Length: 400
Ligand code: PMP
Ligand code: GLN
Image (cartoon, rainbow, N blue to C red; front, side):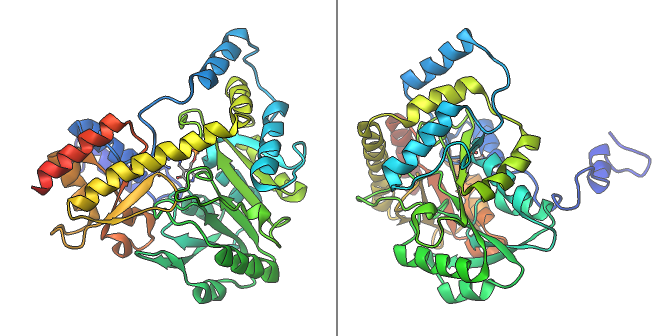
């Protein structure tokens, strides 16, 4: 519709946006954009990181039965007791970390809300938060909304080693927190013990909170084992570890996440969580309480399954002559598109979705300055073997 000055209503609205100043620079999430493009193009969706298969039937049955049985009302804001206990048991079972489920565990609407609750509960205007680039898209907008400032430290392609001197320079009297995403999306990096020890020293000497985004804690390759920030000497009382049941149990739509921290830091998470969502669905929490306690065989099968999927997709990409960055953890891999003749990663992703029939994520969206990541395209392999095979066929046809 045109108004008197010849501008469409939507153009006019975008100039006088209702969106607050802090969020205006951010736009629509690249995952929403690429999944929409995949749907419009009929492409196989290797962009947004969600499985195209269902999580374990027993978990879904428990949730369904709980919904039918009821009650279907609000539950405790901090999470139902059996789930908080299961999370505490898990911290002990996998990481030898003892936490009190009553004062140290808070259940949230996915890791996304746990991150928001943590940052909003912790930050004051003028505080600084160190982010390691490339970085997941959920951190910067919330930091901006809290009136704080994100300070970026780059990890360079293709190894994503942490430049510890640059990191040390980023810490100052205004630094309130640092976010460590480990295993790391999109690079697949797993932080070394040495890197974690250096981070711990810096946090201790500058009185900084370490926020661990550990949603891929159970998806590591080649025999690697996850180290949670809460197990790093010096970080026991100064870290907030955030995770989610989304990836581990292939139920990304359920949004059951949590934060684990000292009672004092948990108070900051809980204070904002109660006003963001108050609580998350009790039936789904009940199902996850059982899921987390499953036998070791479940976790071993998860690793084995993603190891096979990683091998299937990435060795095929290797054989096509593509330069593949093999991940050490997560279910993402990137290809270096430098020699492929595209202007940048976004152009290639548009081409892949519309002409090849395979959707991917332009990795530059994980950088503040997109020119730093414009040579990388991220593909996810949390898909059935049939989907992966079909994607390989389409990519091969294109490469020929
Ligand atoms: N952090 C990272 C690094 C992620 O990749 C994701 C997406 N799965 C999340 C947080 C959000 O997790 P959730 O779906 O539980 O909100
Ligand atoms: N974590 C998912 C990814 O990296 C996206 C989740 C989301 O869309 N918020 O692809």
